[in-house]
Amino acid sequence: MVDIERLEVIKEKESDKLFSRLRKNADKYLVEDDKVTLKGDYYEKQVRIALKNFDIINPDEISEYIVLGGYFSLAKVLEMDRGDVIDVIKKSNLRGRGGAGFPTGRKWETAYKTDDYQKYIICNADEGDPGAYMDRSILEGDPHSVLEGMAIAGYAVGADKGFIYVRAEYPGAVASLLNAIEDAKALGVLGDNILDTDFCFDIELRLGAGAFVCGEGTALMESIEGRRGMPRNKEFRTTVKGLWDKPTVINNVETFANVAQIIENGPDWFRSIGTEKSSGTKVFALVGKINKPGLVEVPMGMTIYDIVYGIGGGIPEMKRAKAVQTGGPSGGCIPSRLFNTKVDFESLQEIGSIMGSGGLVVMDESDCMVDIAKFFLEFSVSESCGKCTPCRIGNMRLYEMLEKLTQGTGEVEDIEKLKTLSDVICETSLCGLGQSSPNPVLSTINYFYDEYLEHAQDKKCRAHVCQGLLFYEISDKCIGCTRCQTKCPTGAVYGSVREKHYIDQDKCIKCGECYKACPVYAIDRF
Image (cartoon, rainbow, N blue to C red):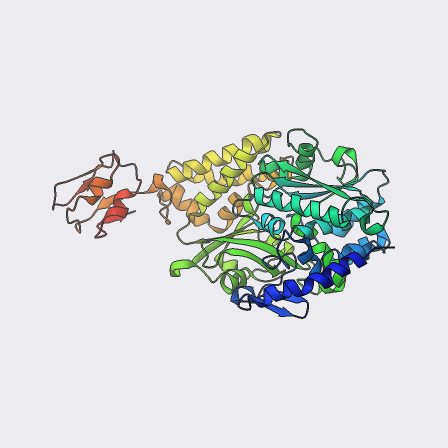
């Protein structure tokens, strides 16, 4: 018999305290019965499931999580057949939020049907995409939602041990998780004989050392086992032969954060949100050239335009949007003309990008797309584990060609070489990092070919970002104030006071300090 009474006692005892605190801040919270939502234009178009409790509860107080329904879903599944729990997840069409979008229920079912005395649950919290902070926010703001989701997964597949692989660079998340695990064990919703049943499930933390490749499942398992994080040859599914060669379910933070609410509200409720093939919501870190950056959770199927302009408030300084990058270094750059594209797994894949873990970087007309591709590729080069040649050597060759283009020494032929080599790397790399690392290159060539051509053929950067392609010249507007001369670090600017100045192009390093210093805008930049 499941001991649900201890949860009900806490909920009844602490409800008034929590709701009283929230009602006192009426400008921020809307409290209706036992439901709480955040108020403000920023949240009107959002649908919060994974972020349901974020910025509402005190993450260090397990009682506040319980007041808003926490751990009641775990109590519910402990009275269900394991196969029935998996059927609920399958019917909900919850897909992995780590990037690949694999159906969560099918993954759990494979592990459940694999006969072994030991099975594991792993939460992948190794969030490494530039500009992404979704996992960190959930772990810091609502850690119990992840613990409960993992415990439900453990019960469903027959696992008694879980690991959360979290980045050591997230000390706040680590502290929050350690406190949450301790409180959950003290309450009896984690550890031995959970809620007075025979189900036992324990969770440990493993700290990552900052290697982006450890976000790949098999590399992550190698790291947990104490070896260097390098991808394995995929002879078996991890649900059959994973951590220490035992059946292992790996899902990311956001996926687990959805599980308890699916159990609570039912699969039909979850499927009613989003699209037919991509149910539910997706959390994004909306960053870059945007008026209202922040963490957003939107229903699958919302357009990029609605996210950027409807929630994010558009582009600062009245500039025009140029593109958005989804999926981090593994994703693609989507031009503004395709902003009516729906944000779901299939739609993004059709236009050469991916959902990824949830970074959404907005770029405006002041961004150079060749330089953007180089930036993301440089990240992939530095984060490659080096195990396979296509990723280790191929990405370096891509980076070198992009460097030539941005320095003004590239040729038109280099553009075709970039495409050919990118295709080879995608097809022959060992793991997902290498297979997707050329995506920023391929997508920018596809949608911004004219910028590549300008760099290679005309030796120009329309965004004036690539220093190797810039040219500064002082016009007749010069009043001889000497400010440009004073700021020049190489002595390239010369001229007398109150007379027109000149730039020695042989000494000019194209740093732009003279351009910034001129009070009368007498310096032209080409």
